[in-house]
Length: 312
Image (cartoon, rainbow, N blue to C red; front, side, top):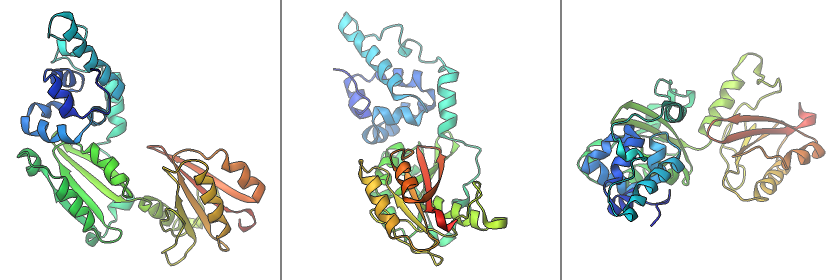
């Protein structure tokens, strides 16, 4: 049996618990897995790929090392091969590979982003599941209940004993982005906030700058609202319309963007949030007389500000 990145950790450990030593030798930052309670809870929630991400490690590397260790089963001995990380459980990981990725994933010294630092207290809901995790209790239902109780525009601030990577995908599908802090080795704080909230804050910040011009020198939108299937506007100025096309299959992003542009009023700007630069859309925009400004962000987010050329 070959272990895959999508396999649950609990299933991998059930195959051979000594694989835990392979994981810990490759990702020492997850030494909390030695605790049976932590291992039980995390094992049910996380896949091998997510475990690798928690440690800032390429999933393929961890999968290869686990499979190399398991391959020793067919050689007449149950000991992992000496070449694998399991032969030296106390060995530190290769610094260039792991440290770089970990530093990119979590910036523990970073200050709060502006859209979170200026958050009104009534929009913030704190949930601490560290005791649940330490006692082997499954906190997922509490987290989902807290998310469901959030007011419109509310932010869930979660405390956990390990980075809750599996939640990123779960809440991401429900329209939430996240920002993560590591306060201590077994203390993580994650802010889950509505998608588009950062873009609204960026637009408002740019509008309040002297001259009211963005980095490209063009007139920026002054306010924003979030739109998913179709663009909507909830802000007083009504100048910025947000259309999030991440996760849509081609040609849906282009179709929805062109349809949204047809509804733009005078002076409005369409902000398309994409996972990549929309290369096929850009020639259409040029032909139709639209100007655009492309801004690439971290974590595979591309923002395209689109406005009528005659409005500049």
